[in-house]
Every structure is written in structure tokens, then in C-alpha cells.
Amino acid sequence: MGLMPKRVKHRKEQRRSVKGRATRGNTVAFGEYGLQALQPGWINSRQIEAGRVASTHFLAGEGKVWIRIFPHKPVTSTAAETRMGKGKGEVEYWVAVVKPGTVLYEIGGVPEDAAKEAFLRTAHKLPVRVRFIRRRHGL
Amino acid sequence: MAKTQIPTLKADVRGEKGSSASRRIRNKGSLPAVLYGHKEESIALTVDHREVETMLKHGTLLVELDIDGKAEQALIKAIQHDHAGDGMLHVDFERVSMDELVTVTVALDFHGTPAGATHGGIVEYQLTEITVECLPMDIPEVIRVDIAHLEIGDSIHARDVVPPEGVKVARDPEDMVVAVAAPRGVEEEAEEEAEKAGITEPEVIGAKKEQEEKAEE
Image (cartoon, rainbow over all chains, first blue to last red; front, top):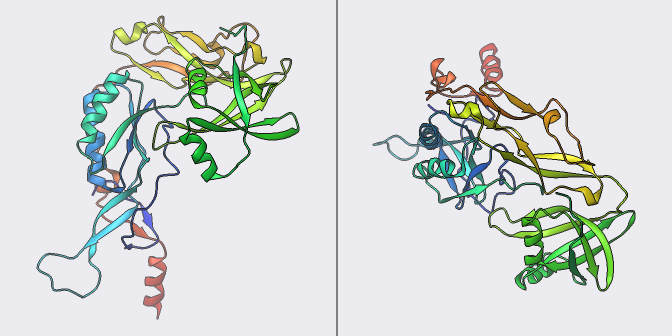
């Protein structure tokens, strides 16, 4: 299991739909460059980790990569060849709920070209469309 | 470098307020704005989007607003951005007088490639902008920081930043600005702690209590 919460209030959750745009976590706050989601969706812990590995390997130890999302939501599924009913399935994986505008990753301490290349590799691992953004200075 | 002349920005008093009216204003290529400060009444304004954009590109913070013929000196205090897009949504102007100290954020301009970086060191920028206190006319566009002399293990703190004359750095002097760290190499992050401990599912808050209570019964 990759990223997941240490403690939860409830073991299982309802799915719910992803509505609206991100009103929080929508700016570059730690690094210089960010990868921003343009679509709503769920990003599971394996995808988050794959994205991080893709960019960190490309940067080869230079700079720093921040993950701005965390998979708080459990997703359950019913085992194969099981008849319907008998209650909700078991938790299979964990996802981060992402709204358009959410900054998913940030990079700092590297030139812009390197950050762009690194994020291009990350973007291939993600299930949502993303774009490259820079930190807004001053105001 | 500090400005010698204050750029003028034409502004109109905005009659209609609210989100729908603001949207209509933005569609026309203008930008809703507000002017406040000095314990005077705030005025809702409309300014030209492109003019504000150009001013910000040049690092201009101090402007002279021409509000229907009346001149007011103001500082661009805050800007609301459309985070899912690229544009601005709203600008805040604050009235200033030329003899009062103001606190603003100014970008740092790093010059040179650190000597340590050529030997494999990693340049870590902790601050890319810095808060300064000065008179409105002395607000610098950027503050230059020379980093060419930095070797591996060296760093520049807020106290080492040399602002132009009349400008005072308003930050903790111990705050790190930039450092050159030793190369880390490609490090594979250790497996998740939870995985090491063999934990595959999180603890459910309150679940233990319930189990204990049932056992007691």
C-alpha cells in the first residue's frame, strides 16, 4: 500500500461526485513551478507515487519536489466472481479527490526547462489533464 | 531602481457592483477595482485590464489614479487571480501619502551561477521575494542578490541582502534566502513506513473502544 491516512473516522466512504473548481490549494505555495489539474477526478496513491518518482528521477537529486495532494478517500470494490449483495466490498485503494485548479505537485530549485521536462513525465502518469504553472510573485 | 515619475492610471467610478456586473466589466476588457485607505470612504472603480497588466510586468506598485479628473496616489495592494485561468479578476488600491513608510514585497533578482553549483552543489532558493519597508517613491522593482561567490555549504540570509538606499528589509535577519547544498545523488526514497511495519489499513477512530465495550458485555 502506498500513501494512505494513519487514522480515519470511518473505514468506508460513499463515492460522491466532484463538483466545482478548487478554491483552496490552487496556488504554487512551496516551490517555483507547479502542475495544476484542469479536470476533476480521483488520483490514486499509486498514481501519485508514480508521478513523484517520474519527476524526481528526471531531476536526479537536484531541486525539491512537493506533493500537494493526499489520498484521503477509500475506494471499495466487490471481489470478482462474487454474487451481488452481502454488503459493501472491502477497501481496495485510496484516492485524492481533485478539482480543476488543484496544484498537484510543485518543484523548486531547478531551472524552468528542467521543471517543465520533469512535469511532462509526471503528467503521463496522471488520469487528469494538467498544465504547467509558475509561482505568482509579489501580489 | 526607484521610480522618478509615478505612472498614471485612468480609473472610472463603478456604479454597478456584484459578481454579474463585475463579469460584464471583465468581458469588456476592463477590471473591477477598489480604492481604500487613510480612513476615507472606499470607492469602487473600473480600470483598464491591459494597463494594469503592463504596470505589473514592469514591477510598478505605486500609481497615480486619475478618477474622473481627480488624482489620487495609491499602491497596488492586492490582486485576485483566476487560478484556473490566467487573468486577473480584481485589483485593490490603497491610498498612500508620499511621506509615509509602506511595507511591500519585492522580487529578488539572483545574479550569477554559484561556484558551488559548478562543482555539483544544489542551489536551494528559499525566498524569491522579500518584504521591505520604504517610502513609496523608493520602492525598488527588484533587489539584486549576487550569488556567484557561493561555495557548497554557503548560504545567504536576509541580513546579507543589500537593499537600495532608503529601503529597509522587513524580515527576520536569520531567514535563509539561498543556499548551496552538497549533492545528494539519486536517492530512492525508503519504502513507506507503514509498509515496513506491515500496516495495510488505517486505524479507525473509536473502533477499539467499541470492540472493548462489546468484549466487556
